[in-house]
Image 1 (spheres, one colour):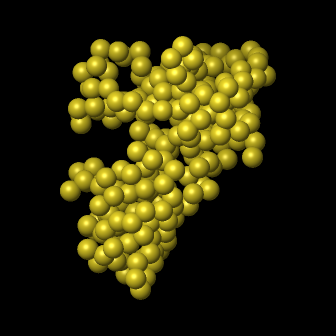
Image 2 (cartoon, one colour; image 1 turned 180 degrees about the vertical axis):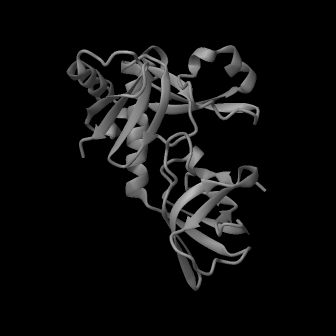
Length: 240
């Protein structure tokens, strides 16, 4: 069976019941439904805890397993809950929420720097995007002001779905050069920032995001590093 990705329909779920359906050869725990996001697309896997009658496991991270399953990786070796055990998932919400804020902020960074993206990563304190950008921006302060102005507009962040075929017909939706959208299941998730004429961004993404841009809070640009002849790495920090 395939783990139901509960985080995709509601990124704000921090606790939910589930059933253990498998163990991975590496010692991971596979549930029938997961609020834990697995590492992918530059976003780290979630951490937290699962508990059941008579036991508990601290979850260090979450990864993708076979057949679109999601595996929770225990923080240390211990006896795993048996297959069929009913558990309660408890997300490290503070960590996840920072990932959500930074992920949405990085989408907006790709708006104020409208160049192809060659890579990216998300942390709890900072994230970064790599751009196909031969020269560093001349006015970093202007970019930072523009980015925070978008955040302050409190734009709605929503999702939509598009068929694989429709996405192939609209290649301009794909901003990333190094990571292909997750295609093959017949449809691809799109993350939209803004609505109607106020829409500022629409791109394929499987990660978790805040519901409105004002939730991101203030951000600041960090270092801009040269990474090869054509690439610049731009760091983005949360102010709190």
